[in-house]
Length: 144
Image (cartoon, rainbow, N blue to C red; front, side, top):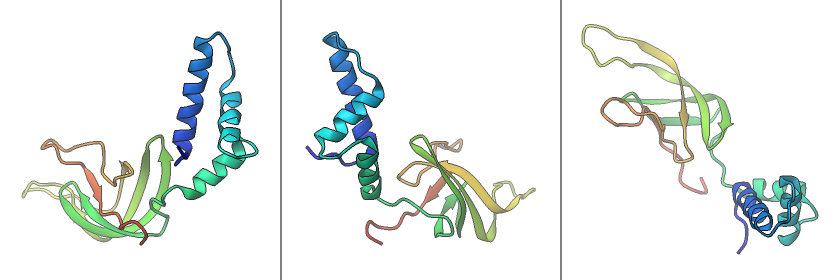
């Protein structure tokens, strides 16, 4: 089986360490990563990591135009900040037009910039009180 991602390689290294420890052989995580790299035809872990990182699908980029829904409001905007946070991404979007993030008629809160956390599917793990993700991005189809 061919490795598809850095995460998959790290998972295999962890499984290797666990299996060897069960047989009485202790190795470091770095040693396990080097073994996994060589088993997959790479000179070392850094080489395998670089190869896998280049092959992973592109998520989103700074300055990319996006659209979606935030707290029930449709929006379009431009990504102004993006960073990986574990399995999720911290994202800030400068909106093309302000949106009202309050659902009460007697009060409003117009926002020109929104921030949130989304998974690789573009959906926020945090939900509103009615169970809808707080932030949902419409992701480009693969290859766009």
